[in-house]
Image 1 (tube, rainbow, N blue to C red):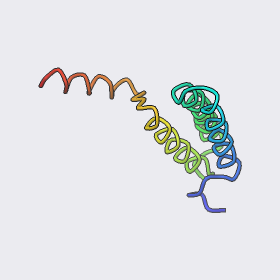
Image 2 (image 1 turned 120 degrees about the vertical axis):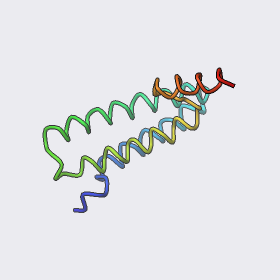
Image 3 (image 1 turned 135 degrees about the horizontal axis):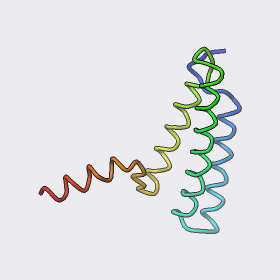
Length: 98
């Protein structure tokens, strides 16, 4: 069991979220599909962070967290969702200073 590789459970959950996002995109627009996927991914991230706090660093939770964060970033790029508020503030400042 390599602690640097995400668990099969988390990889399976991410794959399920992605399949749902793609199916939802057929029925709705890209933004709605991605928002739903981001909500689910952020819930998964929160659960993994809680598990890390309770189980400790010697587990595969750090790898799970990294994998979920990578997937969140990938889905955010699909919708151009600059979710972190600090990013928005920085972006607005750089635009206004020009």
